[in-house]
Image (cartoon, one colour):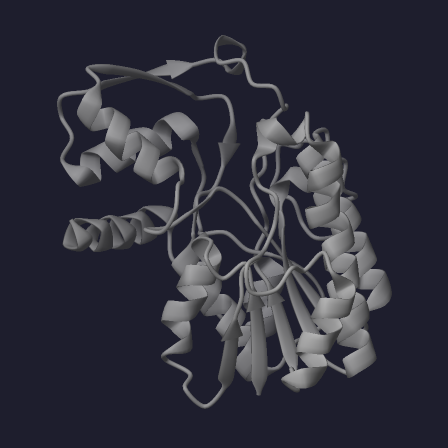
Length: 286
């Protein structure tokens, strides 16, 4: 197959590059905004037709959650209308589309893991635009697969893990919220499951994927420091209202992964195991 990966310089895009080496029987077209502006539907259609693309994997998004509150138009353009355009092009050209979405489509008021059947109810600009993108994709492309994920990190780009490593080495004390509960997701594991879907055949629909297990941001930070051998920084739990942010966060956004596990026959690693894998790679790079 000829596979187009958008947002190729981001966390997931870079992991897709790594995993693509394990599947050399496909031809890959890794693009970012300087190569292909996904907001320009004519450019996308020309690219897809010109390269006989069979599958689009959309890893591009506006992910600055707090900034989105003041940049609604740009956020909507990237998270809502760009995926809609990709879906139109995919449908027109007979291609499949895998689109990555987020746990922020839920308001986080539940107390049990969210299944794909639960009605979304976002409470931030970021979440609203991502949900709108999902809806357009499902409406416009008959071979669309949406994967909602959460708390994404990797050895690439800027993310929570790298920030906590840096702060843990710079500071003696650090406060982190303990009343927001979810599951970290290693982008390498998400890339792996995307390739499972590619190899076994895209099954249209909405799916949830994160690593296994549950924790708070506080627990996540404590584990990052423990596994990295950081002992000079004392991490304290904070309530959400002690750490004000422009955009509201879901207090509980654990995703139920039963559907994706059954559909593609996969096993998902526990978040702590995958965190250890990522930290070892970061240590090797240093």
